[in-house]
Length: 112
Length: 218
Image 1 (cartoon, rainbow over the protein chains, first blue to last red):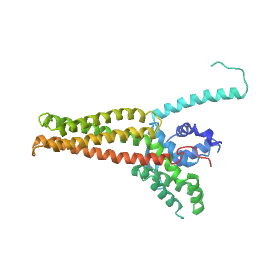
Image 2 (spheres, rainbow over the protein chains, first blue to last red):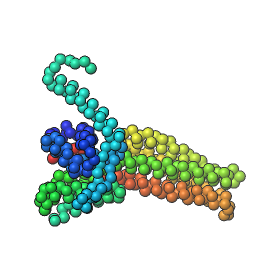
Image 3 (cartoon, rainbow over the protein chains, first blue to last red):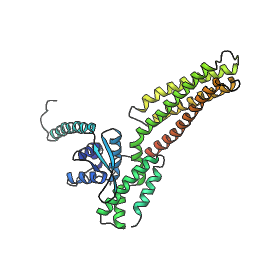
């Protein structure tokens, strides 16, 4: 998948990955890879800044936990604002995708 | 173990040394992530090398993290500056009430009062403009000039205030001690503002080093 195409949607992708449940960075990237059949294989170096930015914006919260293996992991979860933001982004995406699909299919003009 | 992960984390920590708390948090997160990734790749030096390669250059990651943390840093710098303005205002009012300039008849004192007031209101004006610019979502460079102007004007106002205090104080009494204490507090807060501004400059430099936060091509 073209990295430029992903760039504008990174925040929505991360929020969507966390809608399944709280997860740490590694698990989020794995979740994205699995859910998209490997189409979105995000470089880890791009996901962490997005996680921190979303947390700063109040869309995520995070806490340190200890894994059964005794390792410390920072786990992220959607906040109420994060869930609302994800709902809005989904709606926006559906409208955008429908319009592009319609355009690419060469369909007749549709009502706004 | 080849130590590749350790050396990557060391490099990342040194890139983020303008903010110790951010560096600690990011390094702990990244170290854990790299350990998981290397383990999933089978462990060993080659697995560590692949894990580090997936994470990308430490400098780029640091730039992305710096960019993500910049709004909080700006809020902190502005918070310190607002506190300094308040402390200076209290010091100024206490001095004016307890040791009035009017009776002294000193030309230098009147000049110092004028400098103090002009510098203080310049700081408030620069602060108001800077506050609006800083949180309009764009930028970094645009936000730096007003906060620096504001802090510099506050420093001039503070210096004029201390000079006035020295000029007008006639012996040691509570009337002198009270504004002197307030001026000392304001000076300490101003010092904290300048430390915070230096950190902000380094933070902005680090976040501008590359297009941090973008989805990199692999």
